[in-house]
Image (tube, rainbow, N blue to C red; front, side, top):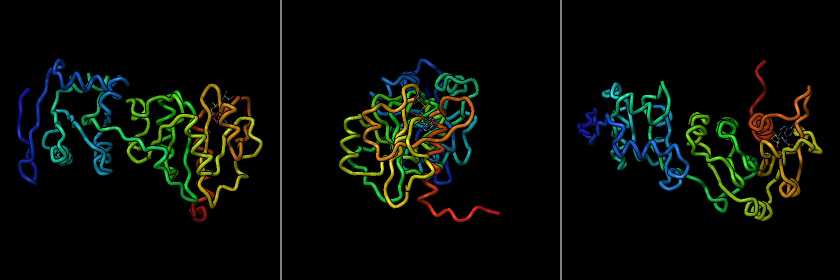
Length: 287
Ligand code: SAM
């Protein structure tokens, strides 16, 4: 491992470690972030791509390590985030393509990746406001579905996503990739079913369960004027009775054709954009 100084318009800003060996202990630690156990122990996760890293830093996520490919040295944006990383007490690593491929386990890795401290919001800290919409997911299992839902929640202007029970890790590399950066923009809450039920009883949002046997068409619900929580069921089992019974409304998305149900992420998108349409003044559609 060798050191050199980053040189930016702002002058000398900090040390960069050059690493070429996969057996370097820092690289071993970063590679171990592919395992949930290591993410949980360190409270950190990996995000890939220059834009994502810039967005995360702008949104004040704590960066622990910035890693970039040797070929990126001297590029203005990379030098800028390297300087910011050092200023915030993080480590900056300049590595070979082989090291980046090993960390990301991809043949064509992103040239810039970073380790961030993970962040979740406590359920008790959520202050519901009228006309905001939360998505609550019961035991979501699929990382791609969760990432897509977080991305969709961001695009629809949802207040955040609540994860109920034993769910897939929102900070797994696959989920973070699927969020396309929205992981940094959407508040995430983790809770148990018991805690969620007690909280919704106490705070009384309009709790809308999305259910194949829902008694009302999702388009006929009056979402406006109150906080709304859209409760979505698990991919295999759907909503359990314990959660369905707590809902003020059980909503159905009418389907044609032979499919039994919609994919969870698609159903969430349909529900969410309808609820948001009621709450936002989006103006008239363009002619
Ligand atoms: N076999 C499961 C069941 O019986 O509910 C299917 C679960 S579906 C793949 C995952 C979730 O997406 C459901 O629990 C529900 O919240 C939502 N969903 C899918 N299709 C829906 C529809 N047509 N109407 C309302 N919700 C739907």
